[in-house]
Length: 139
Image (cartoon, rainbow, N blue to C red; front, side, top):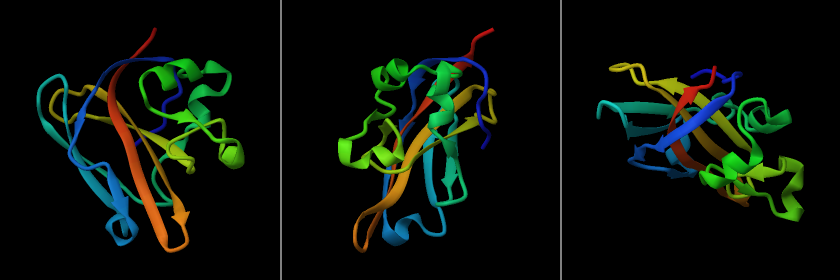
């Protein structure tokens, strides 16, 4: 997993096998697979709560990587409700939201994954992957 610092263009959403993990399902990590849009290779994504990912704010801060409207248009995030704005303007399920970059080892296509992790209610922690999208860097 890596952070993304150059402007990108979202191409297509990949098919993800499992996107919601509750309580112990996410510990010590949430593991899912996604199918490469380019070559069909099945890739594994492993998300470790409190270790994996980078703040989603890094993407839309000053439109450095993606604009807020692009993130919303592709369904990567939604606008945060007023009571949870301390997590940022854009989140997944009003929870702390992170992203990661990854590559398909078979064809080297680039992907961005977006997920949130947090306690939805006392005793219920949820890791929710909003999706994994193929992207290309803009020159």
